[in-house]
Length: 125
Image 1 (cartoon, one colour):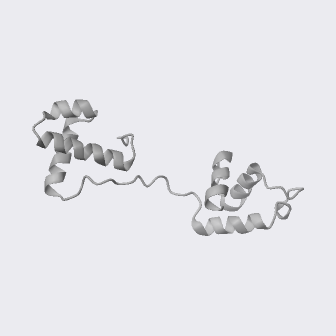
Image 2 (cartoon, helix red, strand yellow):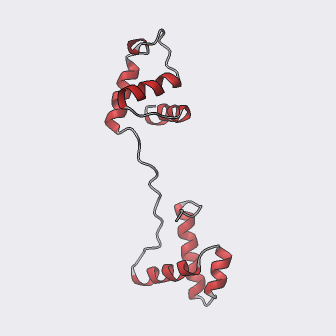
Image 3 (cartoon, one colour):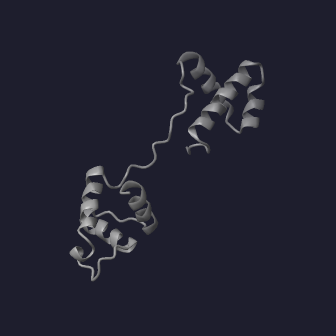
């Protein structure tokens, strides 16, 4: 089963609105059709709202696990600070391709070049 499209807050708002409409007397099949959800989901959400407190609350999707742990990132940072020449390249220029190769050599983790850019920008600053 795939996760529905929308932010956690939007999905929560949709669940709460669906329960509210059914509680106000709207037909579950009509609400399900309008909101684009399965009617069984409406019944499940309504039961969760009644029985189990705030089970309709937003749950952020955790996303994939990082392929390099924090300790490995710190080590990668140290390796980069040594310079490209210390790792066998003819000049001091770090390129995305070289960082990708360094990651593969030291951690046995390959990355797409665009991901390396994001990794450098956001996780290593």
